[in-house]
View 1: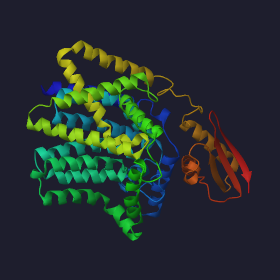
View 2: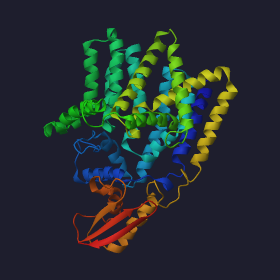
View 3: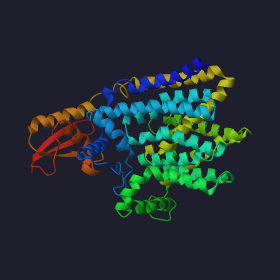
View 4: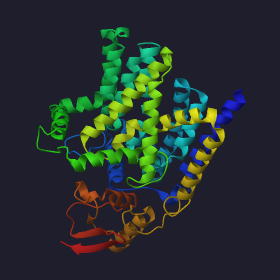
Length: 468
């Protein structure tokens, strides 16, 4: 039995590891935002400073906590500051996430559900894209499973798990603020099971959230709580704007249709590689939502299963409402909800397996073949190393541009600019080039007499030299 369990676990793990590490050097993802993060790490380490804040958000007045810098900074430094270190690190995090998924789903349901969910996670396009991006917010995904487990345990096993639920939430908030969408559902669960908890338990949960955020709160304290004050104002501003009580981001047909489209895209991309809303994404999304509705109506009378479903439904449904109220959210705002489409599909597959094994195997086979055909194409593993429309600049091409600048400047001081997508952000979103130039011993300086401008056009990347 033990050997069988190991094989059950190893199959999706091996597939997941292969898909995350195959041709990893040829497909390094490196953009201005990653360059910004790596430059910050380099600057903190060279200055001998322990940072109290982490990466900035899209709002200039708000930053995340420093845990990403604390965790990844030493790893990047030990790896010689090479960008490939980030790719390897987050590929490993992707493998760890599959392991965490198997463990948590097996604890909450059974081994068969754990196997199906781990297999789906291993081949999921959205999960693989998240790994390739090597972004700090990827760390939310394994933690969201632990949050689900500890919250369930707090109402079914021991109320002391509420403290660890808070700890996990506090850690997640260091990597992104999207886990805030889990709070309303959590409050509903705690209210529903309020007879099990004391004020001390609630205080312990709040303390758990507070502890991982002490560094960020200290930084904010030394700066007059400017971030806290603006964040407290920003949340109702988004909600009031959406419902029309404030003339900004008000819900209209475009925003509402965009929200619905993003939901179906999120669900379908959990299983198949798609862009935008399609007939297949509508079918997948509708089938999954229909299964969820039907399955929730026939929850076992078992107290343990009821509690698991109460937590899952509260976090997923109310969590999505939070995303909906945000209005046309970026894709990574769904991160705390990533486990749920995989989980719901796995439960449906277990139900199907009991009656129609051949159909279940066929469905999984079609999904696996479809995804593998996508991965072993020029769209994933064998991306052309040239600039293409609507695509990132390949890492090898970035290095070629950097080498062109180094050869031309011949050791003189120079400034750097970039013209292209997202160049309205800090540093013209050129920090990836700046980082690679620093790594080569030729870091740009502000306002030098020589200036290089990198033009990222739709299908080409060029560099132009000017004199001030």
